[in-house]
Every structure is written in structure tokens, then in C-alpha cells.
Length: 188
View 1 (tube, rainbow, N blue to C red):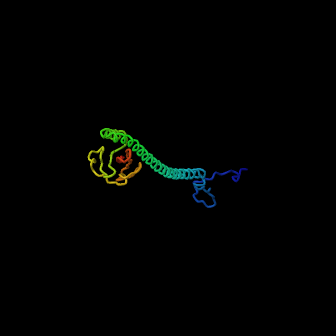
View 2 (tube, rainbow, N blue to C red; view 1 turned 120 degrees about the horizontal axis):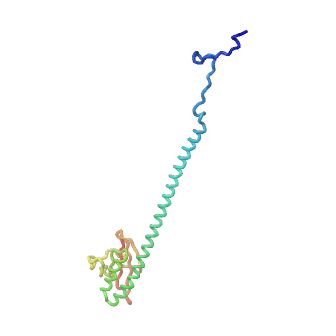
View 3 (cartoon, rainbow, N blue to C red; view 1 turned 180 degrees about the vertical axis):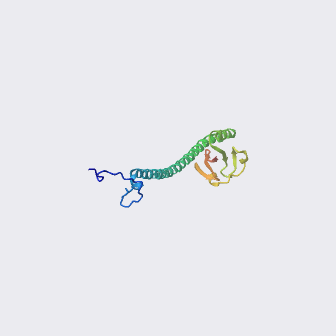
């Protein structure tokens, strides 16, 4: 008894192209298949962008701080420079005073020339405080000409002043009982 009913028959899936009655398995979308990879990729992009913007913000902050510190230090250097000029003027005035009392103007000129070589000084002048005429100067063109700033010429004590875009230091040179002149130093 052989029956054909119990024999398994191989069905050809290619032969019948109709899909009636057959269920095809549904494919998962790409994002569901690779969810973990996509999630990690998005996190990588977010962390890179966050790092970039945080770095830019930090650079901007530090550039502002560096600019503020630079301005503060430049102001402090300028203040120290002015004090240094004032001290130089006081010291030179004492040496000039002793030579002027001894009527040794050649030695005063030597002091001026040495000061010009040693420090950041452009010009050194000895000005008569009554007439504002330069008696002696490192720039010989300035000798016997009027010095135009009365604030420096009439200085009663050591002072510094900005005049014509240059720093000046003025120190009166006192004799035994009268003022002999004013020492004026021009820097940068």
C-alpha cells in the first residue's frame, strides 16, 4: 500500500511567483538593525562638537584675560619707566649741580653725553628757568633756543610729564641760595 499522500513533496519556490497565501518575512529598517552603531556615531559627533565649542569658549576667555594682563603689565612697566627717569634726573641733577657750582660746563656736557649713551634717553638739556633758553643740550641745535613747555621749565621739584608724544623729566638744579637752572631729560 503505497500512497502518495504521506510522501513529502518539495515545493519549488521559484516556480510560483504569486505571493498569495505566503507570508514574506518583513525586513527590519536600517536604523533598527544598527541602532547601537548609529547611537554611538551620534554621540561621537555631539562630543566632538561640544569639545570644539568648549575649546573656542576657553580660548576666547583666556585671550581676554591675557589682553587684560598685558595692558596691566604695560601700564606697570610705563609707571616704573617714569619712576626710573625721575630717579635718573635726580641723580644727574646732583652731579650737574656740583659741576655748575665749580663752573665746569665741559664736565656737565660729558655727563650729558654719557647719560645719552647709557640709558634710553634721546636728549638732555640744561635750561635757564628765567628765560626758558637751553644753555646746554646734547642736540647742539637746541642750544640758545627757547624750550616751549613752561610746566617743565618752572618745575619746583622733580617731575615727569608727557609732552609732544615724549616723556620728559624735569628737575630743578639749586645753587647755594638760588636756582641755577632746570635739567630736562627727553625719553623716547
